[in-house]
Amino acid sequence: MRAAAPRCRQLADAAPPPARACRLPRVLELIVDLTTTSFIDGSVAFALYDAYRAETPPRIRFVVAPGTPPYRLFDLIGLDHLFPVYRRLKDALV
Image (cartoon, rainbow, N blue to C red):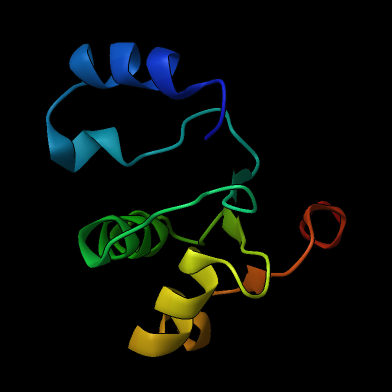
């Protein structure tokens, strides 16, 4: 989510309707690295959860460093129990 954010916005603007936008064609797995994220709110967290649930089987992995705002939010609302959350990027890559 770091340097790719402007490119992601461009892709989102050109994306198909939301029902199809969550599909991950030709991607084996998607890793969402939130280790350097300084702010996240509930709407973003639940959008990530919705994207995770939209895949059958789920192919999204989340990396959230302990002590960070995303980690505290995931813990507070219980998302860390609903999908796999890795503490380090190298663990998610295994």
